Amino acid sequence: MSFETDPSIHKRLEAWIKEKGVSEIELILPDMNGIIRGKVVPAARFLKGVSNHTLRIASSILRVTVTGEYPDAESDDEDGFSGTLDPDCVLVPDPASICVAPGYRTPTAYVVTDAYTHAGKLIDIAPRQVLRRVLDLYAERGWEPVVAPEVEFFLTARNIDPDLPLETPVGRSGRAETVSQPYGLEAINEYEDLIEQIYEYCEIAELDIDTMIHEAGAAQLEVNFNHGDALELADQVLMFKRIVRQVALSQNVYATFMAKPMDNQPGSAMHIHQSLVDRATGRNLFANTNGTDSKLFRSFVGGLQTYLPDVAPLFAPNVNSFRRMRPQFDAPINVQWGLDNRSCGLRTPISDGRNRRVENRLPGADANSYLAIASSLACGYVGMVQGLEPGPLITTSAYRMPRSLPRTLDEALGRFQNCEPMREVLGEEFCRVFAAVKLDELDAFEGVVSAWEREHLLLKV
Image (cartoon, rainbow, N blue to C red; front, side, top):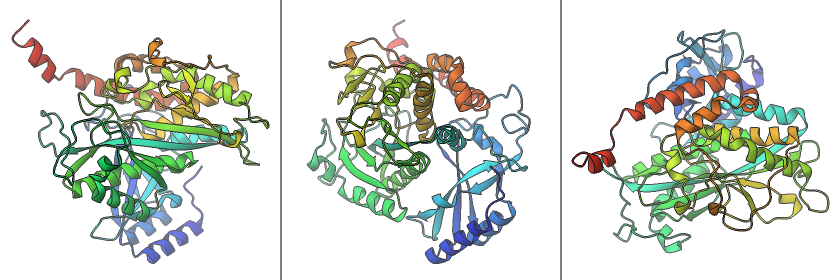
């Protein structure tokens, strides 16, 4: 690909900006953690930059840690974009992603960008490009994956002091939830104003969300996205998180997508439903004409079972992510699969052949949407190419079966760094830089003494 864009793109963007009355553009480049980085430019400056490729930013933001640090680089790549040289990269907006940014005093738009070198080459370590790289492998075989994420999150009272535990916010009844209310309609109505504003803002931003439910945790909600193109859905999850946080702040509460934000509450997941269609005909390739599971479907599941434990940092990217993966909190601990069995890491919903799919229940809500989807599709792709077979369907509780997922980020990174098939599919340079970012974050975490240690060890050992 090249950033020598079609001149018609400039005209389309110009017409869209004029129609919407937008005066500022937020250029968005998601980093390794899925944190939104970028800059704000006036609309006229944006259009000029699209034409002459002068929308630039320091390329180092692609390898910044969650604490705002930069890992020590072992070496620079040939262009210096993954090491210490830190040249500018050129931001090229994806016109399909531009949307009105709701809630701003100044009429503003969001647009997701891709990062290029000055020579017009896409930067391979950018998470959005990692997902595109996987999708290109599917396209070469005439396949098109279809995904539908489900994202969970908690509402909490404002938490100014990070040393204090989170608390459930007060609802419209004047009370805070204290017990589990799964699927509770009265419980979800406690936050009716906030939810209505989320739907309103998502409609303005043209996010294709469907159902919202109350999950098992206190003030824990889940939204389902309608199925569609993997890259578009990754963009939408990114923007959804931002909108939810902004709406929550406007209502004087917090919204968090941490995988496990509270001690005695369940964690938050980002379940990913996946199916596969023929690009030419649109036929679901996961089912035979008689509605039975196809060989491609079985091999896709076999690939998930074989490789997901080795790419866990891509869907469980933080130390906190592994606190969620505990049976008592309804989160999977292995990659068993079952028919409509939510104790399994891989669930096959009951469906006819046209809707045959598999739900990957492993990713946490804290995961980078691009990398979580890319890793899942990469594992399924390798499974189909290698013709792998899945294990037997589980008809009992998978929590009784051995754990096959890593227990810690440290263990997960060790497995990730040694998984050659995934390094080949996802890109060697990306895997190296991603691991460096995560190892740096792990080192920072291990230097912090926790409240648990002070409580139980300070005066006893």
